[in-house]
Structures are given as C-alpha cells and as structure tokens.
Amino acid sequence: MKIKKGDTVKILYGKDSGKRGVVVAVDLKSDRLLVEGLNLYKRHLKGDGKTRTSEIVIVEKPYPVSKVMLICPSCDKSTRIGIKKEGDKILRVCKKCGKTVEPIVKEEVKKETKKKTKSVKKENNE
Image 1: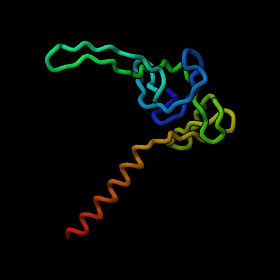
Image 2: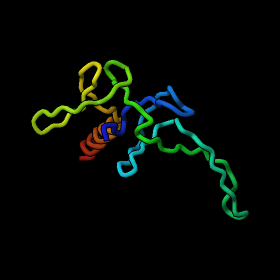
Image 3: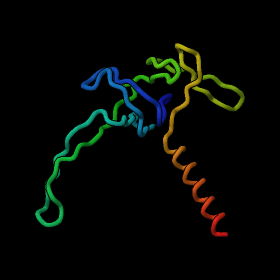
Image 4: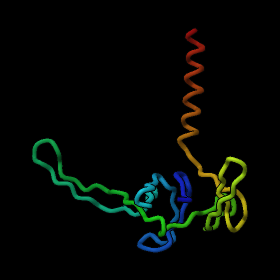
C-alpha cells in the first residue's frame, strides 16, 4: 500500500467526496484506512439500567484505499504515487511534481520533546 499513516488524502466519491483529512490508521490486510474527522456514523448504545447509561456515540469508520487519493505536501494536488529506489531506501515520489513524499507524523515530535525534558530532570537530580 502506498498510503501511510500521517498522509493527507482526498476522498474521491461518497458522502464526503472532495473533503481532505489526515490518515490515522492503516489496515494492510483489508486494504482500508481511517481518516480523521471523516466517514462519521452514529452508534446507539443501550444501557443496562445499573452501571452503563444509554448514549449515542459518533464512530469513524474506515475507507477502502480505492476511495481515496493522496495529496502531495509540496505541490498540494491530488496525485498518484511512484516508487523510486536509491540504494537500500525505497522512496515514494509524486507523479505531478517529481518530489519525494514523506508522511507528517505528529507523534514523533511529541516523543522528542518528552525525551528532552526527561534528560534535563535527570541532570538536575544528579
């Protein structure tokens, strides 16, 4: 699969057609992906009368990969992806502008800031 977690995608058809969103999770076995804030459905949960209360929960359902198209971060257009090999590395390349496509992952930035703060605390204690 050429679409990865952190990529921005455009929905091609369906009730959310034309909308953009960030990929949250990818399921390789069923070729589906979860897009943040899109394909929302309501699920009615029944309470048991004792501990659990009845409520309506909004759930994101996964999209098939054939229903979405990747948006290149450099040219900001919906595009297909090519694969280019440089030595041992496999790079994803935009078919329209020719630049490499890297997914933007927010979690890596958060992890790096946490590591820096922990190391500072250790130095102060010693």
